[in-house]
Image 1 (cartoon, rainbow, N blue to C red):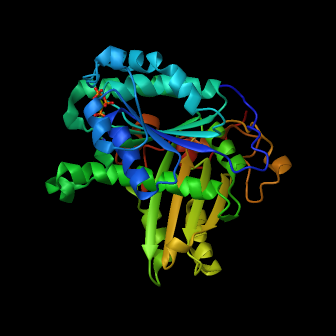
Image 2 (image 1 turned 90 degrees about the vertical axis):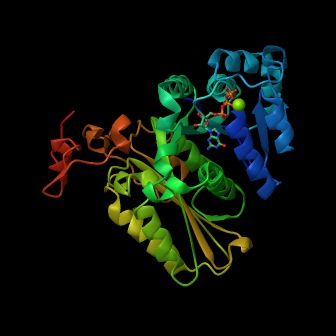
Length: 379
Ligand SMILES: Nc1nc2c(ncn2[C@@H]2O[C@H](COP(=O)(O)OP(=O)(O)OP(=O)(O)O)[C@@H](O)[C@H]2O)c(=O)[nH]1
Ligand SMILES: [Mg+2]
């Protein structure tokens, strides 16, 4: 990852492009466009049938490679397909400040093409966030291996990756759900996050969060971050939203907040949004966070959210040294990590962050002793 400066967006609203890659990514993004046609988004796939069915802004890649078929789980075909059409992709990326890539890893097109697109986007100077789903266990070891390999390659160019394990979106009670509904849920999760980001970047944001904050978060999160979204309506909406963040499965039932190194919270409400509601949600979240977390929050008002409150939370478990001085940038709500000691107390569980903790005497034994006992390690 290169240490690029914040792209000069000047007085204009930063431009965000959402790219759905591979069949599941293409369908997810087409779904977003049907809900929000204003969104700058494009679906990319090798498979003619998929692109014809979604009927929205799309790029057909690798016609000479797969002849309009899918890549059939062959990552190399996915890679060749995007390389053949790389000029087309470069054109899409002109003047884009933030590229959000959406894909389901485990097949040939998405897993082969996304690492290449990520590289092209970084060369074009865009900030790159990849939202990827990881295959279900029942899809077998091949899909899992393809997904893990692709993840490593994406990581070498993307600023940040949000990994959504399909498995983690469901509980036992969901076993009878039709598969379409299962996938619709993961699409919805990605869609909520993307809409929230775009509201924060637009001029609807009334406080705090802007492109510079998102830039700082994505460049410092050391590769991976976690996402959770929550919605509430009616009188108790603030409590509903706070509770749902505190217990969110994608945040390991809220435990990730306790180890957070960096966090962005974006709240959206209607014109009826009250200060006490913002306070209620932020206080609940802050109570869980360690003292030295880097934090930023933003509030957006959108008349369509009358009677509702929506929150999106991006959490980084690891934090690199800041590339940009928050004070110089005048960011109002950041709390910086101390410089006098090693930052090991914010270490996450890496690959094991999705496993249940081993709890003994109310202590999570998967957390290293020096963290549980708050022992500071000198540099
Ligand atoms: N969220 C979501 N995930 C899906 C969907 N369909 C498939 N997946 C997941 O995404 C992974 C990749 O599947 P596809 O998107 O169909 O694969 P592809 O990238 O088009 O690759 P090829 O079909 O081999 O060209 C699968 O292993 C599933 O885990 C879907 O509709 N929604
Ligand atoms: Mg496909």
